[in-house]
Image (cartoon, rainbow, N blue to C red; front, top):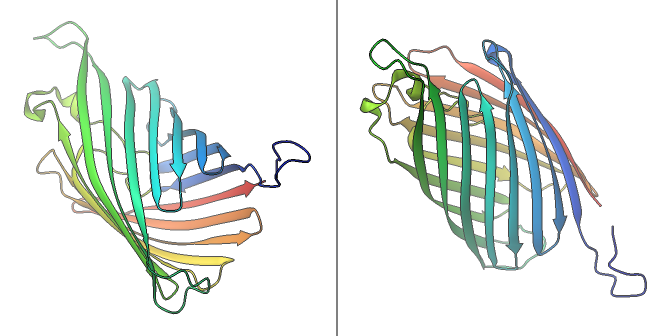
Length: 277
């Protein structure tokens, strides 16, 4: 715990740091780390990277998030940049906000509905793909595709159970039928729950947590994504894991299975740790 100044109010100023790793099918290896400072007002810096068999290098992403977390209101701005690798790069900017309705402040969390949270988010991603020249078009080109994501989130907590839902729609400024084939293969989405190549059109997910034991919170999750490029089939991801907590220390373990018609199933294991002081 860091204190603003000796002798002043004893309210702590929170610092939280964490790291994670993911291994999976096809030699997938991902890493990430973050550092967060603040309590109600927070700023968070993050870094992640991944590579897989057949990739020409490591794809890296750096991000920054500034947020306010009040008793009811939550609002945040975030930005990230992915430097060019394997001819691909992107940068993104977004915002999200939510409001929590307190239904029951029973600290035991077992006497009924506790709270309901509803939120919305928006993000804009600029994809950049270098396309090599062809016989018809000999010059190398930088194809730009702008993606806008709009979504809603909701969660309901009661009887020691939390159900979280989200749904999103992606809109693009390009007609993919007019793009070169090399520009349609991106992006590879480098987080679990979305480890499939392609540009999403619609997606949704659900997560169920059981919080009876404060030190051990198991969860189940499912996510479905439909893609813009047809006839690429939709993907379905199912997952399970557990979050372990002891004081300021946290450990997270998870497993995810991605299924897509016409392709082999892919499996991913993720693990991470965090510490608040």
